[in-house]
Image (cartoon, rainbow, N blue to C red):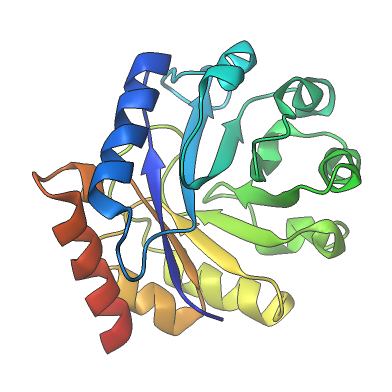
Length: 221
């Protein structure tokens, strides 16, 4: 599978989300290996220690030259997922721990032709999604505790990637959290093919330079 870096936005307000989207467009549009998607973190404090932008009514105000992927770190997704479904959102990543009926959530996305995946917190074993894996387009593994950007990658991430790849050999594995020049290579070797990066890209003055550094590490792995 062709490895992809997916820039992530971890912001507390709609204006901050929009500003970050525009910055990504300025610095990465036209890049020879430009990202296909941008990833927006959404959290209301029910599954996370922090609160991020999480108002579905604001979705109509968001647009981008990149495709939009939402990471919904919310509880009670069996009933709340419907409020986030929009024609211009391309991919949904739902935090598995916020669902009681994961199959119904996945089916809701697939019925309207959306790409869909579950995200697993570090404490959740990849085998937990075995009954619903056939309804997924991607499996995301959180390499940090849900919510905050800038955390150090969990030490069990590499082993978890290998386990997930063995269980679901055809399912793309995305890693979210702790992605930097030191961690991206080992994750790729273990079997991950998508790398969600927030603080590493936005932490410097030049997103494009940081993005290129990650691409180089993948090529070297």
